[in-house]
Amino acid sequence: MSQSSSISGSTPAALGRASRTGSRRRSELRDKLPVLVLFLPPALLVFTVFVILPMGEAAWYSFFNWNGYGLPTQWVGWRNYELIFNNSAFRQALTNNGLIILVSIVVQIPLALWLATMVSNRIKGAVTFRLLFFLPYVLADVAAGLIWRFVYDGQFGLVAGIYEAFGAEAPFWLADRDVAFYAVLAVIVWKYFGFHMMLFVAGLQAIDRNVLEAADMDGATRWQRFYLVTLPLLGSTVRLSIFFAVIGSLQLFDMIMPLTGGGPSNSTQTLVTFLYSFGVMRMQVGFGSAVGVVLFVICVTLAFGYKRIFMKND
Picture 1 (cartoon, helix red, strand yellow):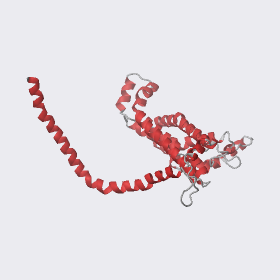
Picture 2 (cartoon, one colour):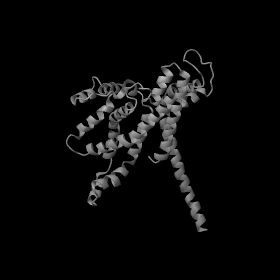
Picture 3 (cartoon, rainbow, N blue to C red):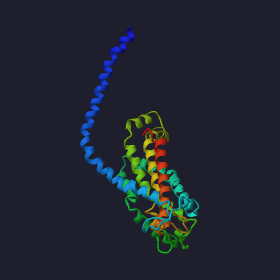
Picture 4 (cartoon, one colour):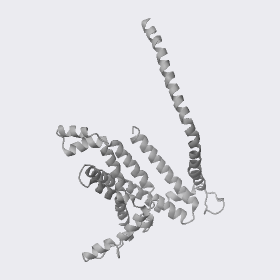
């Protein structure tokens, strides 16, 4: 009897709280409604016209053998997709993108994290070092590709000058099929590590200094403090950095074209440069559209899969 009266006595209070919560939410929605009505339709319209419709058109054109002129009429079904996966240059581009992701995770991000721990401390010249390390990222990708193409030049570039200073004949790395992609990887690490470094600097500055001081008072070494305290607190930043590295690696284009153009012998092709070289430049719009669909599926799968598995709590 007492239990029943207790339940019945608490029900009006619970209903009252629920009613107040619902009223507050309706009030907030009414306050936001003018903003939604004013800004949401134009945003949806722009997104539909410039994103959704082109994606749908690309998927439709991928089933045609079409050169981009007139209306597509030669239906080939899944033939373009079969040609993609039977193309050795596409397999090389897919492998190269995988290597870029691997180097970004294994080399670029640890380097950025190490430098971030150096320049995040309150030492003299720390701001200057941050600026110097971040400058390559500010530089336009096309400009970076042109600069490093000159640096690697075996006749007039910086590499040629270094070899000549030692009395040796300079190599043409970008013309060597076995070496060219490793030269590209070095440029990628140089170009983008500054972006990840600034992410880590922001994450390090958000860590409570009292936690680090407590670890020092407990007798933790510098390595123990980093591995057991700093790195776990940077977990969300590390996961975000890896996410950007993976998606950015799949979209790499602007720097490759002026640097190598995908050569020699397609050894430095990425998925996007392959699309441009074999789809746009050869006027095979149907084939290029199929490559774009494959790239879209890969990007969406990795992005949503990574966020669902590794970033669900961030």
